[in-house]
Image (cartoon, rainbow, N blue to C red; front, side):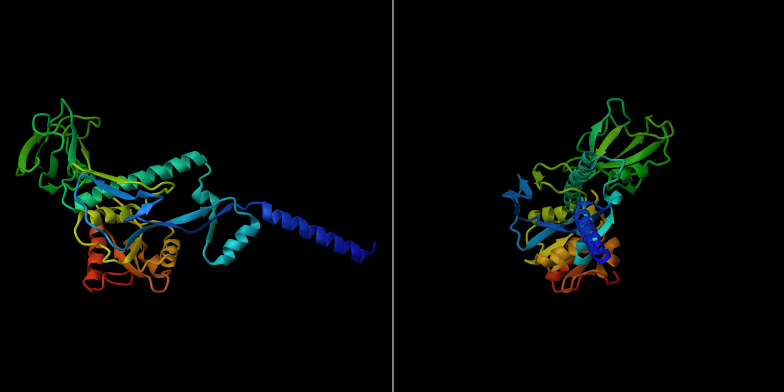
Length: 343
């Protein structure tokens, strides 16, 4: 065999090995890209996404879609090259998405828990927006400081003059107070007027703090049921859209004005909208499926404005109130606050 022929044989063999390895050997990266999008006003696989029973609901029009990011694991060398060239995906170190100290089951359970928390927060935020009492007393300790005055279901309004709109605000109002100090607590029971009681704080687990002897829930007490059903989705970023869907169904007049609206954002029980990841992918998918408007968490606005698909209108939202106000403005022909606007 001549030297030239031998060189050709070796080159072909090397190319074959490289081809096999490129199609089999994985790289320490995952590919992120546009994921599925679901209409929170509609049905998915025959199941109503946001269902309200025991209370009057109103017809909705248009679409209100939550958006997701797809994650592809086990990426091969050639696969990574394809994702990189696609312009639709990004490669990130695998450890950023799948921490090595956690098992696959632990990561899945955590994402499922975050999604469940987003459902609970969305319900609480929507009901709070609609004026239902929150926060409310959940339990009263038999030997607590308020055992003879407060009852489960009472709405806390103020503690020593500080408005209480969440469990955290109640804790903040009591910060620095010690056992034996007296505080004024304003509460409302059912449809009765507000009452003010003076409470002597009692001892608790932390000897440096005073306690009312109650537990509080941020989820308002209502006599109807809200069920959010969506399988195989994880993470907290659907909260804003779920809350918007609840508001839309419990108030007359379609919130979307018949438009195809999409969005994303983690929401707290008090209605604050927090930033999320992967917004370029979410906007891209929203535009591809027909969305005309996209709700963007305020802290994601810079990134969103620099990556928005042409023709997709962005509305900047820092709270549930902002989101409702933005869509209401569109219906009235008023330009809402966008990601390039000054509020």
